Image 1 (cartoon, rainbow, N blue to C red):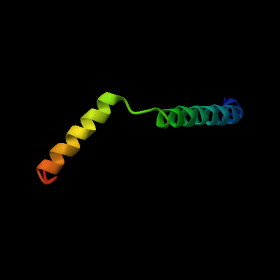
Image 2 (tube, rainbow, N blue to C red):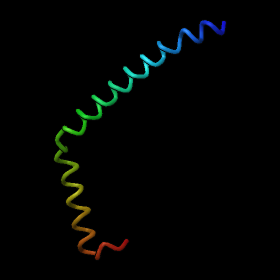
Image 3 (cartoon, helix red, strand yellow):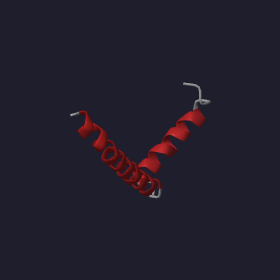
Length: 57
């Protein structure tokens, strides 16, 4: 049984490397997406509120 686990280590490392690579691709693609207009509007509202109250809340 122990021998099976030892042989499985390279497979696990390959799987982890593939998962890691896929996560990096998804993350990079997400960073390149444009911010939706709704979020931009909400950020502007928050900035306006913070500027109007002195930013201390």
